[in-house]
Image (cartoon, rainbow, N blue to C red; front, side, top):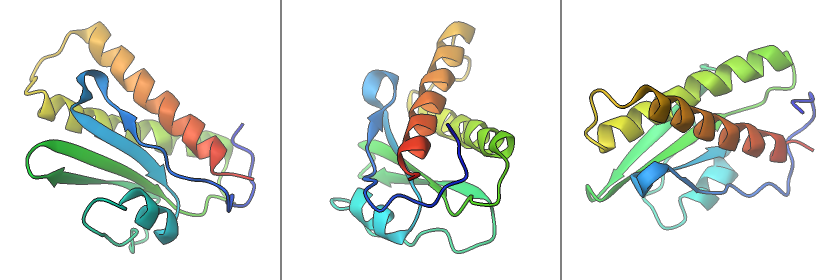
Length: 131
């Protein structure tokens, strides 16, 4: 897990659903994967700045929100740093979920399990995106 390998050419972004289906989220590693993930949504460019990772949030017709965790080449990163980044960005996804649910103070266990679920999905996707 978290081996420093090249990006998989076979990786296909997979949309996950937040608890109660308020937000759909996925992990993308480059423009091609972003285009694939956004096939039925408005097009966007993969992050063009020097940040390690970022979450792009799309609000489509006020109906549902979509979050794309964008993380580029991590070949030179330590596994512990990859984990830190994935946890950090997973929390941003959770913040979007919480806002979409109109929850200002969710139950602590619900919040902990929700963040755990999002992080696990993003970690699994990150692993699948490596060769």
